[in-house]
Image (tube, rainbow, N blue to C red):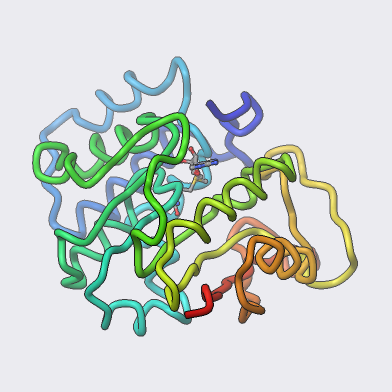
Length: 247
Ligand SMILES: C[S@@+](CC[C@H](N)C(=O)[O-])C[C@H]1O[C@@H](n2cnc3c(N)ncnc32)[C@H](O)[C@@H]1O
């Protein structure tokens, strides 16, 4: 369960505004909504809020699409894991792009964000079987060819937990397999406190490399991208990364 602070909207954004903007983008993908559906969802989520509200602002346009490794990954046909899949937006992107359905698994610690995705895409019946939820990682060694980690590292505050997360990813990858993903970072300076509404970990470039290599991965490729929620003068960025388990 994410901490209460991670349920707050930043910069004057509201649940109603973000839900309706997300529905607009998802509607453009062909999802039909009955009259009053937006109000129904606002009513459903206004009491407890939504986990990691920033994800609402990129729903329908998931980061995986523009990741530097995505085009190469799509040419593969082996088992794929979205590790910390949240709403499942990345999985729907893979399906839209023709990745084999039978090879896709989304895993998360909780159903909460996945259910939000079902509510917004109205597709629970057709894709629920792709998701696995459990309090601990339950996949066997060398199960996947590719693992994606989108905006998960920056929500794991504790170093031991991050170490466990990356060790699990390494063990579950087949030799020669790739871990790729993105996380909030800082490119200049060696530390940065998270802001009031942001995720708890803002990782420096060299620390991300160190954590990945400590789990056994080869030296990663990192690409710096701007982060939608930050201003040009702030040094925070998104690091896209891709690394490999040696084969
Ligand atoms: C900010 S959301 C990102 C969701 C999704 N990957 C995306 O790109 O939109 C972070 C997700 O990571 C999940 N998460 C956090 N720690 C995790 C862990 N140790 N194992 C698996 N999932 C985790 C959370 O439950 C949450 O759904």
